[in-house]
Image 1 (tube, rainbow, N blue to C red):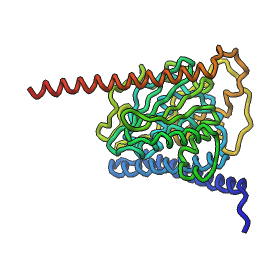
Image 2 (image 1 turned 90 degrees about the vertical axis):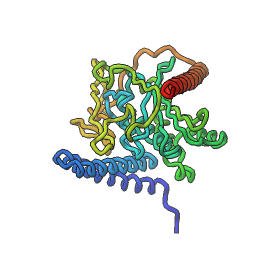
Image 3 (image 1 turned 135 degrees about the vertical axis):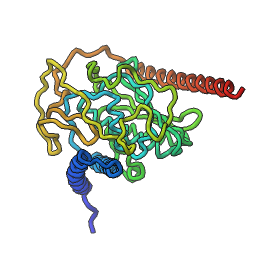
Image 4 (image 1 turned 120 degrees about the vertical axis):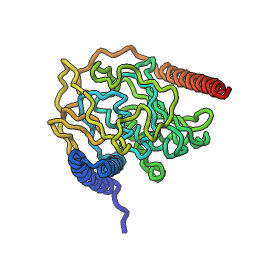
Length: 359
């Protein structure tokens, strides 16, 4: 028997995943209708649990299409805040209650990349939660670099990985879309690698002191945008001095349902940029409807255009790759020092307060 053609097999997997997505969309719509009409709190909690499970199933089907190389490009022209992109990622993983949001820069992700960035974060959140103790938090923060890019930092408190293993995984992440036997064992990272390559996003894993792993996601300038004041979900940068899980719910996380599950968020306010007229793009087979709506992850789908087709604008001052790399490494070092200092200060304050209460 001849081995199946790789392209044909990818097409079959993609079509099956697309059918599953269509069924899951119908299921989620029906669940929303039932949730809206349910007044019994116990039954409503069960519906929310089913809703969350269906959302996680949808993420798996989307990942299958990504790995098959058949997922359609997003053509959304709106802008989603970095905070909302994080929350959307949290809503599609199992251990969402352990994710704590720290300092987040008040910037946005452009529409054509927002859902892919959310998928990248979802896989990294999931990995961090699964590779660490069920009682430990996973913290995420986002910072502006000197080059104008945004650095997202995800920290877990697991046992970490040996240096050679980290080096091997980082090599795979940097290699671009490679699908082989190792991708089956690390499907989440394979999805991350493909989506990151699409938008020239840099993803790197590193050791965390004293233990655990740090994943960094560097969003390049072309996918970062300023936010209108009304689009920012909070009045200031979100600040959490100590990552923790409180009553089973994430501090600074997404709004929860009565059952404690993350509510699938409506589209964040996102409007097309004024005085810009992008050219229409051909509609794909997996194109969102022209009248708008939201994706299952809660990110906005507004119009069937991409701001990637905007006319060329004056180029920003160029920065050499070496300078950019040095700047990012310096920022990482500063963040490590800041985190260590903040943790030490909190521990010292806690010891003083405890000592005062026992006298």
